[in-house]
Image (cartoon, rainbow over all chains, first blue to last red; front, side, top):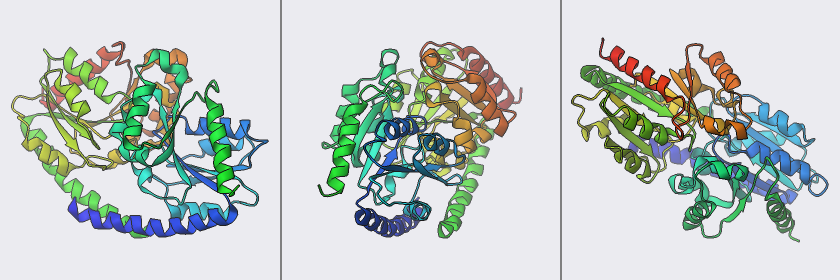
Length: 221
Length: 221
């Protein structure tokens, strides 16, 4: 494996330079960019559908969708009326800053408050690539087990927020919200934890409050 | 991205050469090696706990556990009495053949029927790396959504078997077993689909029957 390490470092350094360009674009536009990551099927797109709909009158939001193949998620997001661009990585396991720069060329950022970047469903690789975002948002479904922050530490160590999704299924699975939060805080004492159900809407208001406050901070208010 | 493609190809070619060594070892020992892959938390370790316990009198089985960090899964598997070796990838998103060759040095393969390799929880990268296995086994939890074979096609295109796990949760989620099977068969008409619950044990007998038949084939019986 030692042969591959310098190569990976070069890729990450090239990405970091482009992430700086993105950070400047977001700062110029006073745009809050959030990088949303989880396992496949944890509910990233459902969270976006809810958030884009419920805060439609409050915030101007757009989405970049990352998928290996298909534009299913972009179609779901577009149905809310939000501006959306789909990136297909053609099998690639994560988004990088070069892809985001390309996607931004197809978007109108005028007057936008929030840019959500829905990363490829993968708890490992996406967390290694800076997209110039103001914050990483980790989503963990209660069906995945409360040990996941300990087993996949980088994402949880780097995220500002952890949403524990599908709490409507808590009666049917072995999952301790307290234990999951404890594992995440052991890696990252500052992480903010919101238990939610994107299916029923339960618990989403504190997430919305956090989002609105983060927009005000990004605007310098 | 074009700069990185030749590098990735070199890594895959180096891996393929080592996978050939593994294939010879498995053939010499008449050992059925199965490469078990899924998203984080889909139930790979639970499937192994059940299988190792229920077939204890029938098959001699050992396990290589792949994780970024921790030996939690190896401890769970060891509790069944099976031989187990833990590989920690130190953040790496998949197992490769070099790691498996190292792990085998610490194992006694004498008289073994089955070697399960539990890969890192990740629907993307592990499927790209040949471990010399007789077959890839995909596990998909019904909580992840029935669209996942279409969205993460490589694993499902390459797997001999797809286990649809957590069917005890079907009443509480939107998931069509028929649709998931249809998406997988569109990529891979030969794929064998077993709906199971590793929690209740429902549906596991057809998987056990398939496993015993695959062992007989590997032995040349």
